[in-house]
Image (cartoon, rainbow, N blue to C red; front, side):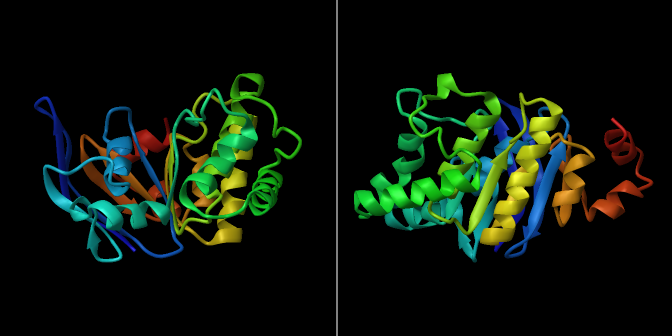
Length: 239
């Protein structure tokens, strides 16, 4: 479903991605790991069509993302959910309004159906009863749950998660990973999770992609990564 081919990207002369290539199969969930500044979030934004590569290409179902324009790009984004690192909720909207926003903007559903779907999604993420609260009135973990509900409200085929546990304590972070795992079992989306939760994330993914100095250092199962003799991989896994 997702194929990245020889992807290069630089900013102000700083080469962030240096020929990265990999594939993600339909229904598969992979972790994208690596140190700070290795290009993980930049890579995710290429897949979402938010950045264009300097060289190489990203394909979704055989279509090159950077070449999609207008309606074709909108169709791709309708199939895709993105959980931003900080949640990216609208501060001036309630939890209900934030989750309902994609349905109101992108569909012709009537208010009763929107309310039904929003309430169901909020129940799925454990936020039923918090509909009328604003982002400033809820905890960081609840913000992530609300953002996840918004990302999933249209039941996307592809989900991109940018550091979903950043800023959360270990217990809440673990709960968010469990929630993502349960949502995947329910929706069977294809997912990429950018994360620093090593080795906790290994229990929730099929494969691990590791970026190091802008290059793909590993594309392996969690078991293969844990048993790797590569000194860079061993040092990273052991913290």
